[in-house]
Amino acid sequence: MFRWLGCQFISGYREANSPNAGQVEFPLAEVAEQEKKVVNRPVDDLEQTEEPPARPTTHRSGMTPVQQLSRTVKHFMQDAPACDTCGAITVRNGACYKCFNCGNSMGCS
Image 1 (cartoon, rainbow, N blue to C red):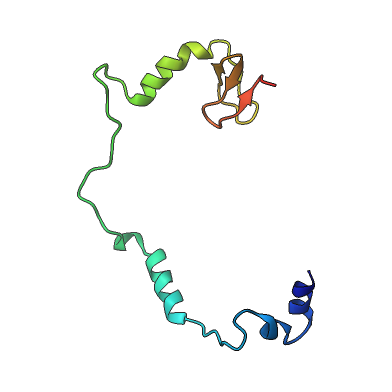
Image 2 (image 1 turned 90 degrees about the vertical axis):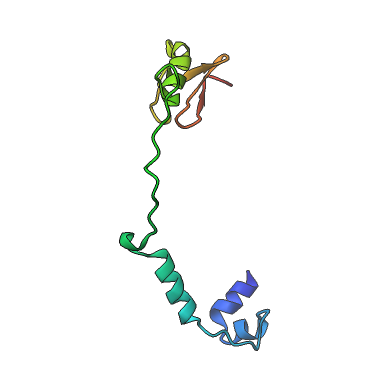
């Protein structure tokens, strides 16, 4: 607490008591400018790939993995209430209910 107060309100305290006292820090404008160019590139400058966008694969039953999961857990949702956190339908998890959307657990002590 007292170091912070000294750094904030006593002129020269920070310079005299910092771990790198006596060393001058030079701003590296070139580094900041290079980083800005790499991070904030226009969409046209981003590298393009030749592969098409990924599509969900279908199982031999003609369903995607999400549809298979929904069909599998459907019977667990018959009496399940809506999640009190996000509103999604929960599934029975033993004597409790669990929300697959947000991970909330309901009805357990």
